Length: 99
Ligand code: SF4
Image (cartoon, rainbow, N blue to C red; front, side, top):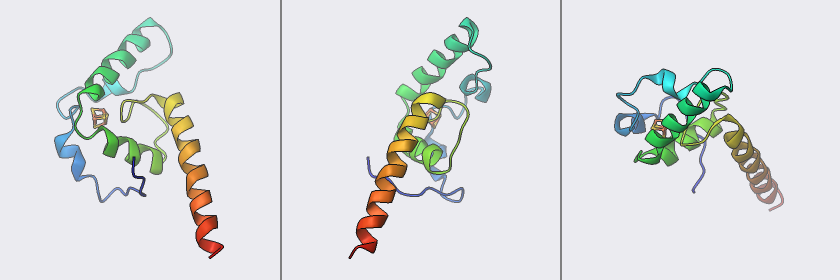
């Protein structure tokens, strides 16, 4: 994946989103009970067929979207990806400043 800082102005990828006609509530389950877990699976199934899942994930990670399913990942999965992205960003910034 090629990371870049996404912005709210550059969300044209949403036009091709597989979730465009899906109730957004599916992607924001409440709680952690069986119903919420079913919802989570349903959301991830939609994302699995999404042609812009990578753009969605980059947007969510780099604009710090804390809640819901984005790019096929739930909140906890995305937090780990965000940690990795921030570490990589810091390393990149340090290598540029050392030049
Ligand atoms: S990856 Fe999932 S949440 Fe993101 S645009 Fe596609 S279907 Fe919607």
